[in-house]
Length: 64
Image (cartoon, rainbow, N blue to C red; front, side, top):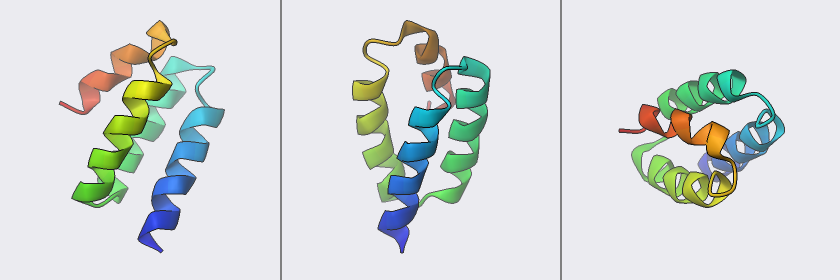
């Protein structure tokens, strides 16, 4: 079940990536919902996903 939540979070984040404000809001929710090891996996995915989307890199500040 936990793995499903991580995959669901990735799907949601990729769907809302057209709007950086919405992306940040969904990222905040996911950081509250996921387990610590899932957050680490999400960070790796986010670094790859936002590599070519400079408008979303601002949201990476939420992780720190």
